[in-house]
Length: 437
Image 1: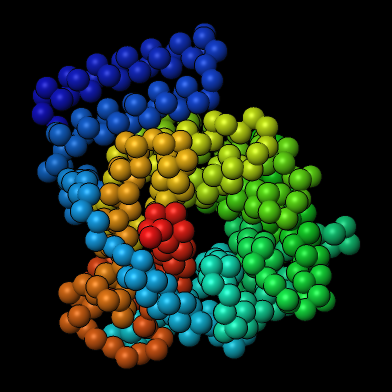
Image 2: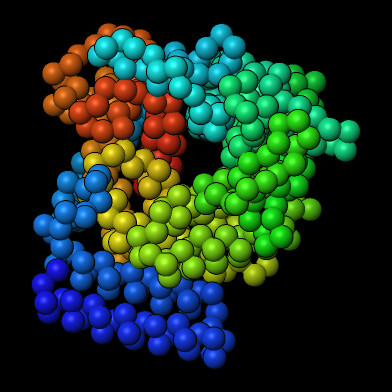
């Protein structure tokens, strides 16, 4: 940072501290605080960007911080549809006989990673439900049923109507696992037609028990404990921005689409608490907060469902989603990241749709350009893609465990289930809201 930028930066910090002091005197709404915080983030980001391009302390997954918003549209429905078909085959081919999935596969060395993540396993099952919801398919249905059986067999129930996952390789439970299994059931039930009535009843009963347990994990301020004891099903530990958002999304979808309106007051209380803690206060602490990054797509998806629900006092959430997308693009600089950022588009595409609904032309254009540039790059990281990047072209394969998988970096072979799941969800959203014709 040069001397001039340092002076500007010091002056800004002094002014911002005075603003914070005023907050204790003047009553300020949470949304106003967020806008102040976002403006602060943009200022700090621009100063640091101007003065620190050669700083050794740059984020390790940024090749460069230059972002060029090009509005030349490169993706098409055909490319995205082919990508979605490939990703579907990848998830199906990597499902184990037990019902869970190969966690990570290096197709160049033909090595299976023996590590595991119960949350990402549940996320892969949710991914199958989203695929089935997008386009019902018998093979996907069979895989979903197998996945439900796996998590049902590895769950425990209490006498007071709660049910929680006891994943075989874990020593304690993760709140996100229960939330994602709930989401898998919710989105499957939304799409399922002509399924066995007994199977449907079982799923609805399981969902009620999982949601009852999920609500029991809420903290006093409306967030969620991130862990729980396997044996007695009691939550503990501080909240996680990821699990906060996953839990909020599960409850929001259950209330909105399955008429479980008894959760609406809880949802609105938790949404307010999560926005305050994971966005407003987190950005006060650091302009490019890892907490806000962890909450980002889950918060955007949850707030989208809340805003479009028709419930009272939810109007603010449209602007919040759009402001969060601005933060992801302008402060977190998602287009400059060198790791897979499909998660970002799960949020930005919802912001695009809200901008479209409000005829916000500036944000429509901005988000469309970012979505196209970002998803085009990530689609080129998919094994078998019609637009494979140079690394994939130089390492061709017919390995059925690899085809359709998505790399986490443009030159790294391991293919992880959650990377594919997030990217396929982003593709589904892009086809639904952005590339409509």
